[in-house]
Image 1: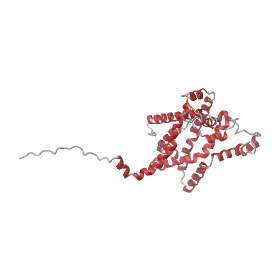
Image 2: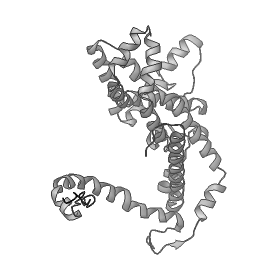
Image 3: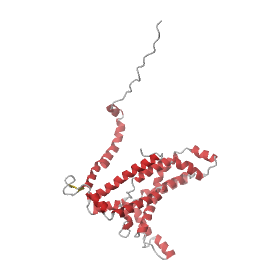
Image 4: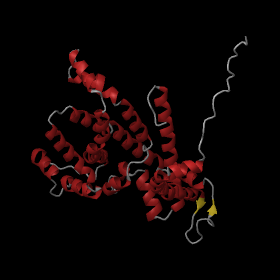
Length: 317
């Protein structure tokens, strides 16, 4: 009798990988949908990056972009040695710190409060009302601020005068500038910022709340032990993105309230770039300031993402 032999293994069969051209033809309509977004980033994000070369040139309009003199880091040296540098840095960082302390938590708190509302009609009405300020132009917001706070018949000062017998120069005082900016930001953007957090709260498993109720947990304990941990990853990601804008406070909002009397606290990098670049024609110098802001923003985003990963949180990548 012949002894049966075990079949010889031929190894795993090779995996078929279609060519790039074949995959493109298969999903061509998906790539067509992707094309407008790619063109947008190419034209408006990547092509303008050549403009950062202005920071290393002494740009003169009549000589052109490529023929202007190369000066290296001269504009950066001038900027860092400028006596106003530390004033700009202080104002920008303090305003960003106020935004992180007061504005960043506001949408989170508001979203949690709305999530606790059980009357659907009331909840939708409140959401609509707090979304509306986002669509109001910052020029209108600044005009409303002037009307309310001016000493010439403003209702706030008229009320103060009726009780204290004096008026306060809110719009001309450096001490009041930052609180006004933060209050404007909270009123205008807080409601709109709740959208992301409400979407994150909608994904929380309802059974967790039911189990907590069975264990005797009240509303505050449910928020602390279930709601906040469930949206922690969303909070961390938005905080990382916010860190990239530490040196950007928004030009329009600040410029509309900036005046010679409150400049000591109101002048930031955004308004300084506009003043030097547009009104004084120092294009290369203002480009150097903008490049400095961008580099600091990238470093802060990468550093925040690294720290978030080290502490076990989900980062941007």
